[in-house]
Length: 268
Image (cartoon, rainbow, N blue to C red; front, side):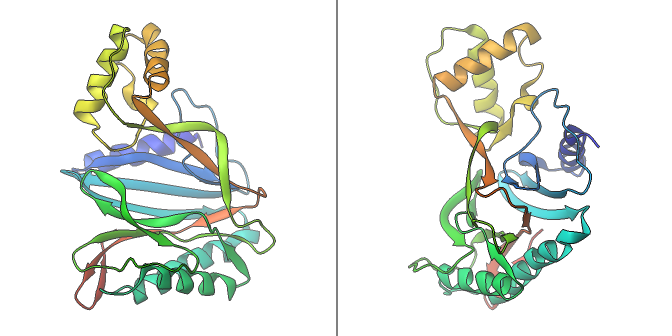
């Protein structure tokens, strides 16, 4: 199946149900842990025997939820995928007001290591704000000394990333970036770049987006140059693709939770 087909189906389904994509649908395969979404005209397909992470977000009036699941086409990695799900379940059972976020990292790591796998140490969950995907507090997947505590009424995405025991257990930036976010207005010479930036600022605000969402805003023959000017001017920031440093396969599971008086409620 074409990756772009999955991205567009997921995003269109969110719109059909009355929401708006909070960020581009991520389809990250095998050793790619996160941040791959299809660029315009993407011809890449889901490979045979792959491990595919699908990460989606929706918002209504800026109130965001974020969730992910891993689809496994390789029986050798079914336990890896199951471990990500179990680590997520164990973490959700622990969350309550006043609990230190670093303690949750210990629960996630212990669940993963007890099953013979390794957490990705430099990827983490995150607090969510209005029109902001990552805000305030990080939720680690390994133990950390932290003064941050879960607070009643706040919203967090919890997302264990799991790899094999012999892997490096961390990600590094890849060479590509397919996801972008508005940073600030700039004075631009190119009129088409101005049009693109105004559209981004008015419609996408502070939420991440894909370049393919901008198709048709300016004439096709002027799009590439205009978009490159936005990047060069630093009006936009890029999210690089994250790749497991030793190129081992990664699984992910994620839910968004609302902290309530006696624990948390899963929103996704």
